[in-house]
Length: 525
Ligand code: SIN
Image (spheres, rainbow, N blue to C red):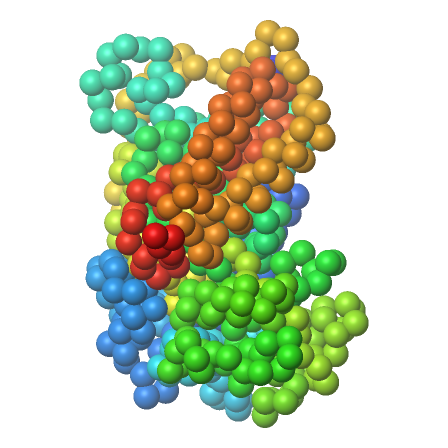
């Protein structure tokens, strides 16, 4: 009974916009799908918390203009194929899939016309939004829809432990001569704390980002970098992991836990100010407060550092024409609950880790370097974002690649199993399982987060990066030793992934000596 097995055509790991778009399109094609999430409900994901919106073509806009903005924000190293795909196909997919099929609502300026928001580095107003809860509107719509299909099984409270691959997990020595292939995953049933195997013809990683490996982040607790670590252990190619985007404005308050103050707030006119009330972005960029995120985050860091302040202010109360309570109801009420009335006073903010621009390298269909393994959404490295992501492009990237990965799998589906199930290793439990000490786990996480924040953060130096890699390597070995003996719990699975992903980011950052976009190395000589 310990070795429970499940079978499906396609396994999807993760339930944000990318995972759910993949799932819905696969279900429509008649394939059998299992979708797992480590959360207790499928809505819980980075998507749920996205405030700003989803980029489309606005009025007086064109694919060429949008492409140029993406490339400029990405500091010139975006993948041209990915940029072309998103700018030419994105708007239609939003209309056909999100609006027509899933009935997601976006804010309108009149009964017939959508309103478009402005965000940093966009040369046009082109971001579709729903108040300041766009992600929630999308996520709730998709989750409702996906539950209508009979050919999907949704396993909540299941953590993916490792991708099942051959030859790695096969006892048949002859499989070594085959091209490496993903055949599913070992997963932890979090409630029963038992490992199960899911056998799948195709596997789609849609496990989101890694913000929680940093001390300060806008990301929810689940964003521990699981997919990057799993893909690395399986031998998949990973790119651009040094480009961690810091969002310039997360709420500075002891009880805020990285609550995001959307870039759309600056899009509606808000200005950044020092604690003593002076605006400062004009010193750093001709685009002022709407400069790319990497530049704004560094400017804030610099101002805080020069003045010895631990936050700056974002002031919308004196600058905006919009009805603040109506346009930003979520931000307004959260701030008010913490004693800040944003219609009357400035908001204390600091930068926080927000988005990883790199990931598991995929082509324009979402195919990774491992056969039958796809990656979509933040865990993937499509190359769209280059060295720094343009605001509100991530939901669209998740949607475009989610739909395309599903189409590609459905159009090329092959039901051949190049292995006998009896050749695939069941999970091997340690003889004497050790229980984890919560105090040690807490301290390990604190170490990872502060190493990443201080040594692999907004401003990096060679010395900090070297120290970061050394400290993380030591920690990784210690955690791995413990993992091999431990009674597995979701906490241990994510700690192991968190440390491995942190080390991946630190190693990429150390290897790349050129400052570009979100990867900034300050010379200390
Ligand atoms: C925001 O609302 O500022 C976040 C949107 C994004 O990260 O693209």
